[in-house]
Image (cartoon, rainbow, N blue to C red; front, side, top):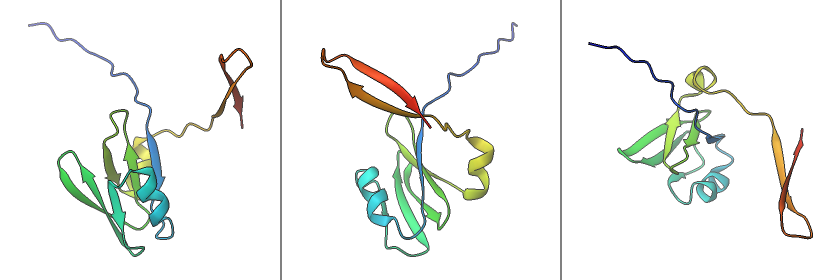
Length: 102
């Protein structure tokens, strides 16, 4: 029997932290997949059904646009933050150019 190892391709993720004050912003960003009443809890419609999160937890969206909650204590251990901000603008010939800025 041969043992093979594979490296998974890193996924580009987006994430927002639930503060209790950003309910509408998260609702719009998640296209209605995350709901909250501005209190201590929020609910995410995941591919496996509803999942709850608490104030301070993160909502993560993967490349397939699936959403899931991640506890605040686990978020920094599981994910690496990309601090690069990319401004995509169009040149006169309609060719996109990417200008990194920090």
